[in-house]
Amino acid sequence: MTIPGLMQETPLTIHSIFDRLQTIYADGRVISPERRMTYGEFAERVLKLCTALKEMGVQPGDRVGTFAFNSARHFELYYAVPLLGAVLHTINVRLFPEQIVYVTNHARDKIVFFDAEVTDRLAEVAPDLASVERFVRMGEGSDGGMSPVEDHDELVATSLPLSPSGLPEIDENAACGICYTSGTTGMPKGVLYSHRAQWLHAMAFCMADHMALTQFDRILPVVPLFHAVGWGLPYAAPFTGAELVFHGSDNSSETVARVIAEEEVTFAAAVPTIWKELLPLLDSGEVKLPTLKRLMVGGAATPRSLIEAYDRHGVNLIQVWGMTETSPLCCISKPRRHHDHLSYEEKLDIRAKTGTIFAGIEARICAPDGTELPWDGKQAGELEVRGPFIASAYYNDDSSDEKFHDGWLRTGDMAVMEPDGYFKIVDRAKDLVKSGGEWISSVDLENAILAHPDVRDAAVVGMPSKKWDERPVAVVVPMDGATPTLDSIKEFLNGKVAKWWLPDSVLIVDEIPKTSVGKIDKKRIRADLAGLELA
Image (cartoon, rainbow, N blue to C red):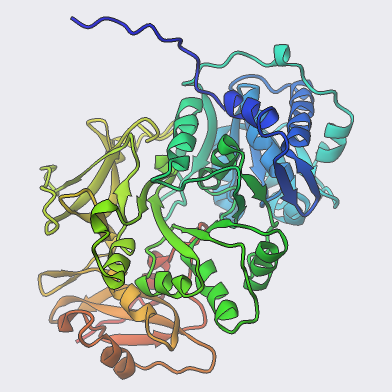
């Protein structure tokens, strides 16, 4: 018979992270184009914003939307809204207009805060936002004909800080935020995060064996704050007192490099494309980033060649994996103690794998019939995960049963699991190329092509073949002044992949189409290539 432990049941909420940044780490800094301030000053602005939100009628459970890029103003809402027991909905500004209308109405946002620079995009759909009662502009600019519109800074300036007694007591299982998936198939799905899940995710994120954040880090989230809780950084960074730098909406290599250099950033996070585009500036010696020590990269598989390239500059590029449904990060790729004897090349191979699951999360791979497969490093199956910061269902969506079963989240990723817990995602289940009854990993083939010196970006899709069912086609963006060909790419790949993996066609393009969250849009590529049939 079990007996209950005699421990206090203090709720795990965003409030406790806020209290820590307000007191212990009050001297930490938040740096943004519109202002520079300490965490203590930031906390006072958050409490003033809480007062303003209450006066606008925001109640526990209400949804407050944001339509904005990376700034201190946006960051303030990550705390002000959940401190009131309300739910922060970060709307992806890159969604199509009909998707913006859908997610805003589906979440039933009461207020929408928006960046002045995206006023026109929001104003275009504003008449169709049925639940929105008012808008709040962040930054100077026009109202775009929307009404009523308040000014963020004016609300803060004219409000008194809400006293602690004015904040509601919040259950740790109450919702604190909602993000919608990118909607590559059908309309986006809502993932409703709890305070407990975000608190536990922040703690897991900061572990030494994970991202090892400390108060000595200064972090640049290049990843948008509107994308999957900003990869958890708005809560994980203050958890340890790490400082935050926001750079606005300009993700150009020149801007990213300038901000890292000027603000002495030690840690930055973005999708692989950002770090691929920054690399030529480092290689040429045009920029020097002496304080930068670690880059977190996710959203797509990281080429081994990219990890090696940043090693040459003394920067540790660390691959992470996750989904909107996993809060969002739940896997990291780092060598472990038993790899100490391996050569540099062998360790590179390990770092290029997807990695190992975060502490507190469980993972398994399953065959199409649901049978759990062994961790033998050979058999591929669909990766499934479960744990305290993994979604259990989509918000108000009848399709949840397709994605969640028996307490597990079906990720849609095909993976091979090794005996020591390392796994490698070989592809999205829908993106595997089936050629002559055998599977080709489009991800592995892409990474091999990306190592070609004449290739800046690449994507691989399967196209119909009369003889083989499907064959791989490579869509390639060349380096400036380069002209890669099918023959030169095949010659480069010789010995690096199986001969039957070699692409049947190479198409040169100016740009690889990407989704609203920066992933390769293979659905669009297939549509663009519709009608192409290989021998």
